[in-house]
Length: 217
Image (cartoon, rainbow, N blue to C red):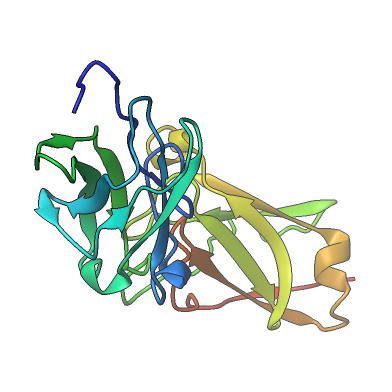
């Protein structure tokens, strides 16, 4: 097998292209993996995935594909039970002489932990005066990370949402603005404001403790 022809890393199609994060909703079924056919590939060569260095699943045999074509493989979801980082690669075997080559590694990441753990504190409203808008400050919570989406609930109905930015972890608090229209639309003297968090992996938190906001029309 000629080693002058480079192999490309495998590509898990449902993983984030930046850090390899997989959605928890995608982990109930096998993960599609694409391998690009390389220069020098021959019919009969075998391609087998490796996860953290271990050969897994059944080898797939190269047929009449041409360089640049995509070979489809499947990574068993049963091998991705734990949260953490994984390395995915593949081994190519020459079916005639048994010589093998290893591909570059692609990183995968699994996160099954719900943000906020068992408690989300209520939103804090520094001022009770309702002008054109009311600003709610969000206390930090366990596992808070950039890309988390905070969805507010006003008397159980979806209100404003907010995506957490990196500088909100250290430099400034998360602020969520509620317009007068948002609050008065509920036609109630008191509005219960709650929120829940969905992280980048799709894990959904419990609902926060409520804050009762008195609305004076």
